[in-house]
Image 1 (spheres, rainbow, N blue to C red):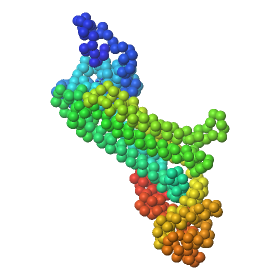
Image 2: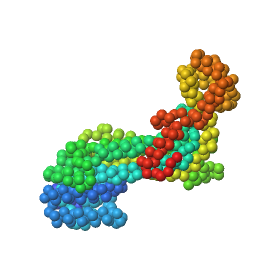
Image 3: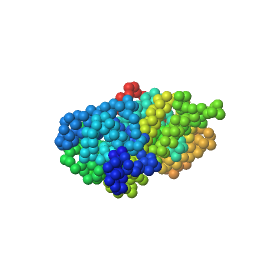
Image 4: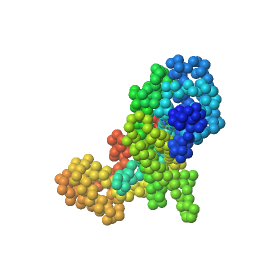
Length: 491
Ligand code: ARG
């Protein structure tokens, strides 16, 4: 019997009304199309927790006598045990998790189960279940983000002294510490944690008592039920309570952005592990071979993280599309939120664990990284800055060093290898009085000083600003991150 089927089939006359079994069933295709059981079974534990809180609210409102309440709570707890042990037999004809659990409860405790749905609708019920589910999921996601951050920090402590050419426009730009780059990813992940926490802060309200849309017809103590469920308060408007899925959008948005961050890291690893770079090697356990080419070592897990980021951002787009045309009140469209939310968070959780595994086992080839940093005249900015320190205007210094880069390219040398004659000619030829005066001092040791300023180590040490890549700053940042995340050790 369909729990919502009271009016169905009654039109045909007394015989059908008296015998609901003779009422026409849903078209099998309509029933199959509407069914959500396969997806929302995931909510079973939360549905039961919400029902127990509702029983207590009904008891406090004297809509249940203590014996009835006790019978219902015992029955619900027994159901929870059955579900945890995989003993509950789910009935696909019963549409969704809520109707399955109500039917199973009836079977277990008898007619008193018919009192459970007093003052409640599946509309406030599912809105509550989803929030309770979200609380657990967000806790798991947060722990998984922290694990990846720890892996990045540990990698930074182990291999962070390596120097890599930081890029802009994907061209060699300036040398940075590998630890500095890894900590950039930690920053991104910390913001992600903040976004999940923020989304949950707004979701942390109980919609129970909103009923179908107008509010329950009994003066239930909603705040007490919310407190029992560990929620921070109650929703303020019953219509909003059953229509609102903002928290689903916000959470999927946080998941989509976190996946984008993982995807950027995954993309970097695929490039860095290409033999042309050879900056890192992915552990064999996190790589795959080819069925045809014996030489291959492919970064498949990273590639799949990249692809799954697309799927989660698709989920966000689907969820926004689902909501945008919906009038207020519950609409069945809302049922489709769950597949999108569950998939987004399951994908994210798995991807975080995969990236932690990849980073935790990464082999860093610091010699290759350093060799790459020595190419592309990445110390040019540091050399220009050194000229500024000697009084040259920055624009003039930029021009002088640009000329030196061109000369170094002709000579196939680095900037810190240019001879005095080249340095003094560049200074003398500049349209800057200070530079002209400096040209005369090149032979008196200034040439040596400028070459020293153009080495990798000197260039790396220059950005001592807060947040810069100078080793002194990176050591502080790494110690702070390690302290916050409870990771022992230092760079
Ligand atoms: N399975 C439904 C969902 O997930 C539960 C709420 C159904 N409410 C209703 N009025 N049909 O959205």
